[in-house]
Length: 427
Image 1 (cartoon, helix red, strand yellow):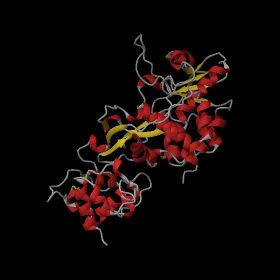
Image 2 (cartoon, rainbow, N blue to C red):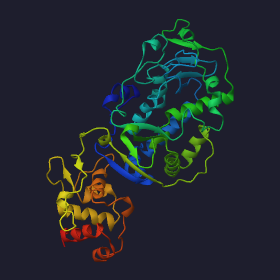
Image 3 (cartoon, one colour):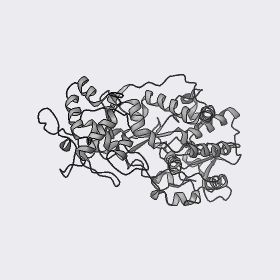
Image 4 (cartoon, rainbow, N blue to C red):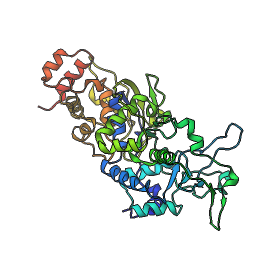
C-alpha cells in the first residue's frame, strides 16, 4: 500500500495503467463510445472529490507553488528556444513552474490508482522540489531547472491520449486567455534563471506583485492542468479512425459537451464549483449523440498485439454460410483457428442483447463466462455481436417479444441469425 506521495512516485512505473484494447473496436454513436471506452477511464468519484478538497486548500496556501503548462518545446518568432520545463519563477506573491504536457498524467495516475496524499505530504513534496515536471530533458534546460524530470507513466505507451474537458491554453476561459497568456506567464531569458542567495537551485526572481485578478487567472490555469475532474482518456490519434472524418475524438466538440454533461451528473455542486474556480465560460450547450463511426484499438496500428489480461484477438471476418445462415461456431474464431465460444454461448449472447438489452460487460461475464475485469470489459462481446452484423442500434430491439415473433418480423440476415439462435438455445 502506498503510504506517501514520494513512495508513489518512486514506484510510478509499477502503478496500474489501463491498456487500450489490442484489437479493433467500433462505436457507432458518441454515447456508445463513452460507455464502451471512456467511462472506465475515469477515476472513482469519491477519489476525485478528495483531490478537489486538497487542491482547493492548496491554491489558498501562501507558500504554494503553481505549475503552468507552457514553454515545453519549440522556438519563438525570433528563433530563440521557448523551452522552459522545470524553470521556477518567484514573484513577490506567487511562484510558478513551467511544465510539459506529460505533467498532468502524474495526477491522473494518482487519482486513477485511488491515491490521495495527505495535505502536508503533498505540499512538502512540491516545496522540496521533488515533484517532476515530466519525462524528458534536453541539455539546454539542465543548468536552469529547479524541478527535475521524473519516470514515465506508460499511459501513451498503452495506447491512450490524455484528454482534457477544459483546455489549459485555449480560449475557453471567461477572459481572452490567448491575448494575455504571454504577459500573464512571461517566459524570461535563460540567464534570468540563476542561483540566488546561496540556494542550491536556480530560479528567476521578479520584484513584482501580481494583481489579485491575475493571480486568480494563474490559479485557474493551474487547476485545469492538475485537477483529476478535468481528465478522460481517448485512444491515441493514430489508433482511431472515423468514417465521419473526426480526426481526434478527444478534441471533438460534441465529445467535450457530452463529458461536461456527464461530469455534472457525477459531481453536481463540486463540478459547478470547479468551473467557477477555473474561470470557465458559461455553457448551456446540450449534449448530442451523433453518429461517429469510430473504430479504435491498438489493432489499428499493429498487425497483431495481444496484451496481458486480454483474450486472444478474434478475426472479424464472417465465415461462409450454409443456406443463408452463418454457423455460430465459425463466426467468431481466435487466431488459432479453433472456436472460442460454443454455439449455445453465442446464442445466449444474441438473446441477451437483442431481447434483454444486457450490456456487453455483463454478456461477457454471464453468457461467455469470462472473468470480471477490474477496469473495462465488454469489448469481446461487442466484437462477437458485431461480427454477426448486430450493432449498437439493435440493442433491446425485440424486448417484450417472443423469439417466434422476432423471427417473423425480422429481415435477412437477422432472420437467419435468430433461427439459428433458437435452434442452439437449450430449452
